[in-house]
Image (cartoon, rainbow, N blue to C red; front, side, top):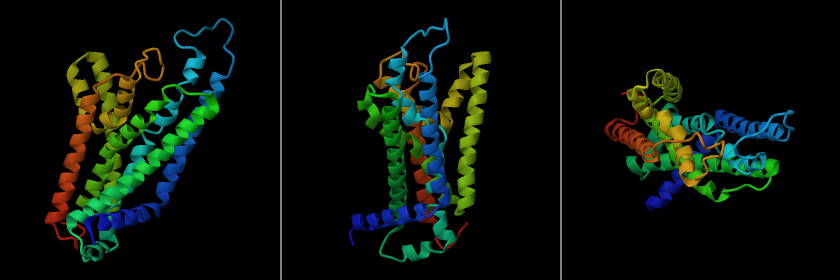
Length: 287
């Protein structure tokens, strides 16, 4: 059996494993519900007449409606997509140890590296498929609620950016799944990193506003959530040179820096997971 055939079998196997999780479906449904709810609320407020004497500065209501696909596509990026990535990858390696199937899988004509590659690509393709569904739903709802959309040609670019950004937490969860060889511990640890990154980042941002010390912003940028959350928005800001747009006018940052930080986290996570798998006894849950 060729390497491609073995990898394809493991990818299919990984889809089946992940799709058996009820938590996965709950998170996906909640993400869809959030997209629908946010766009429905915007539709309600944007269709209400303005109070007497109130005028709008900047873009018109029609101009805002024409770019609502941005809200639809990015509304789940900050929380639900990373959580889905964590749920998919958090049990990828560890469940095989917990269920005693790691030895069975590795008794087949397959190397450890091929095994890990197939598992990683299986989870990645599933995550990419879910993000594609969310992206398509965001665009479809935007057309349904607000009519024709502008700059829609950038949707594939933003989709790719969302996938790449969420590889950070996907890779972290995958690594911890192999390091801890316990699904609950790996998932909770990665969620803890996500939450801690959010809290610490907000605190450091406040400190920067108070003191204007650049060190606080520099530290914030090293936190995983900064690059994972902002990378798609940074790319959108580069693609759409429309400073009056309310959804991207406040977006600014270093696109290349965010991309490099994501790459660093991904590379470190894969390296640690590979060393752990190659150097340890697969029959042991912990070492």
